[in-house]
Image 1 (cartoon, rainbow, N blue to C red):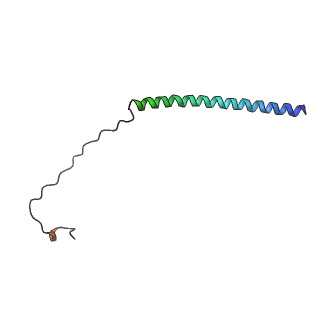
Image 2 (image 1 turned 30 degrees about the vertical axis):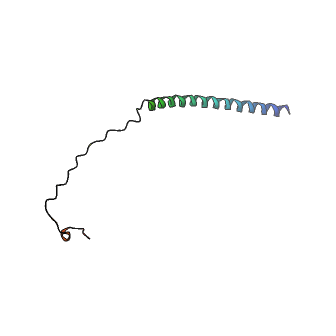
Image 3 (image 1 turned 60 degrees about the horizontal axis):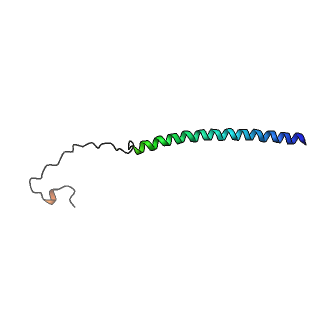
Length: 79
């Protein structure tokens, strides 16, 4: 009976150590993520990511003014 109790206690101690290691690893990762979040917040508050690129002007040719009269039957696509 003592052997079973000792075996169970040893198994529980190993699980406890494993869980403690996992918690420490998660805390370390959370601290790293908090650091990244701080950097992103500072960048956004400085407006570096909110700038939009300048629009480029396009040179579009303008149509010439109409200089004479037309009849509806001479125009294509007239219904």
